[in-house]
Each structure stands twice: as structure tokens, then as C-alpha cells.
Image (cartoon, rainbow over all chains, first blue to last red; front, side, top):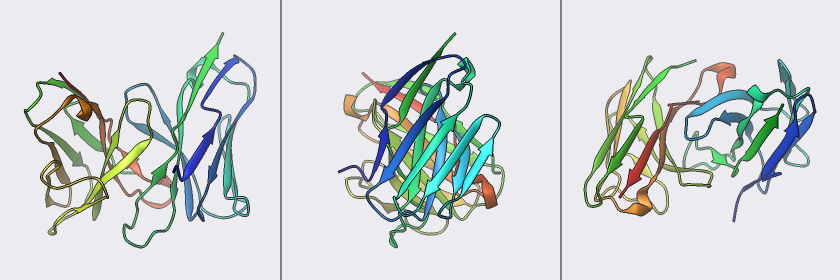
Amino acid sequence: SQELEQSPQSLIVQEGKNLTINCTSSKTLYGLYWYKQKYGEGLIFLMMLQKGGEEKSHEKITAKLDEKKQQSSLHITASQPSHAGIYLCGADLGRGSTLGRLYFGRGTQLTVWP
Amino acid sequence: SAVISQKPSRDICQRGTSLTIQCQVDSQVTMMFWYRQQPGQSLTLIATANQGSEATYESGFVIDKFPISRPNLTFSTLTVSNMSPEDSSIYLCSVEGIGRYGYTFGSGTRLTVV
């Protein structure tokens, strides 16, 4: 089973529109990370959330962590073609055997058309 | 945050052969992580590499297939041995970030086995 579920799997939006990507964990979250990946490339770190209720913003991207719901959301305001890519959430589920291990969702493929 | 140089960026290999992937970090780090991303799938941790000790492998991954070296605090290699087409994936190394930078990933190695 997948510990982290991301939704939607893919998203196609028109430039200028707002969008939200969700990440839900089946386990207790000890840290939630958002990354962006361009097709076939490495991961670019976006944001890290560690406390319940925490919210962080960078440029037009805002991420929130709802500890009670074990869920995080990533919101992009006024999307641009440069936002296109695969958004991945990764979580530290606090399993004692492997410190620092992250579990990842399957990703959300975002396409922004002009 | 740490900067990781990963190479090769991509390779096409014949089945039955082996490929060694290198990751060089610009600062000393205790733990390095190796992930695999199969086509259309999320990242899966292969193993954790600590300097001076044997790597710790996740369920489903074995040392004979994915031997790892960690000769010092800035360098690690992952070898994919006796490759088959099922090994075609993106392989990424990662290190724990400092403070608010989360985990840093290399740019990935895109492996195709023919």
C-alpha cells in the first residue's frame, strides 16, 4: 500500500489559474517535504513543513500542513508555464530503523498551457 | 544547502553488464541515501550509506545487486549489477539538508537497459 497518496495524479490548467495539490499520509507525519521534478531530472526542494498548522510561502507557492488530518496541500497562485513539472510530496514517517528515510507519493504531473 | 554532483546523468547499457553511479557532495555529510524511481512510480529508497559501515538496505534490495561504497564523508557510489531491462529507472542520491533546506537530491542518473 502507498503510505502517501497524492491527488490529483495530473492537472492541466490555463496560465493564470490557481491550483491545489494534496498529499495525505496513512501514518503520522514527522516532517513533510515538497519537491518539484522536471521530466527525467532530479528533485528541486520547494518547502519543508514540520509543525502542525505550519504554512510556508515562496513566490507564488504556498504549502500547509494539517497535522490532525495527516495532510498537506500545495497551492499555486496565478500559475505560469514555468510551474509545469511533477510535484512530489515526501514524508518522514518517523520509523526508527532508518533515520532520514523519506517516503514519497507518486507525484502530480502539472501542465500549464498559455 | 549541500550541492551534489551526480554522474553519469544518463546511460544506455546492455543487459548483464554493471553500471556504477557516483555522487560527490560539496560538504561532509553523515548519511547518504540512494533512491530508485521506476517509470511512472514514486521514489523508493534502496539503501542508506554511512561512512565506515556497511550500507543498510531496504526490503526488496540486496547488496549483491546494488553494492554501495562510502569511502569518505563526501562521496558514495551505487552499482547496479547484472542489469536487466527491469532495472531501467532514474537513480538518485540524497543527503540530509541543513536547517530549512530539507533533503538535497542529485540530478539523477537515467538508466536504460537494452
